[in-house]
Image (cartoon, rainbow, N blue to C red):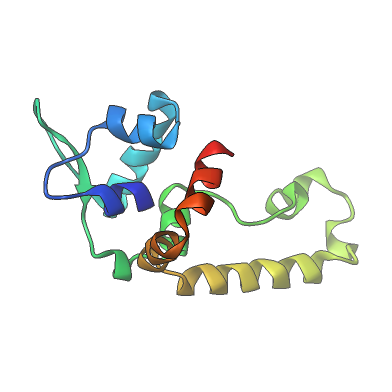
Length: 135
């Protein structure tokens, strides 16, 4: 999302370009982009010069919006998501801790915008950006 929003200059960006820039498998990226499109965070244009483009202002999109769009679960433990796999769920000593942690993470992700991520990246020294690309 950050790459698409940052690099968009008026012309749609192709799946192939995004995959290459972010070193992501095209098939996997296509699945993610479809979910983001269905959620209304990006738009598409068909045709030879088609591709993907922003659908909203980056200031209006939170990280929580993106996670919701791609249907990622924030809960760190499988037993919390699927209570049937643990017979101790009802008497778990750490259940409240994990629930509270999930709430705090969701609160933080609901405040952080896509625009703030882009701005922080832009403010990074070039050497730090190169390290991120290599890693």
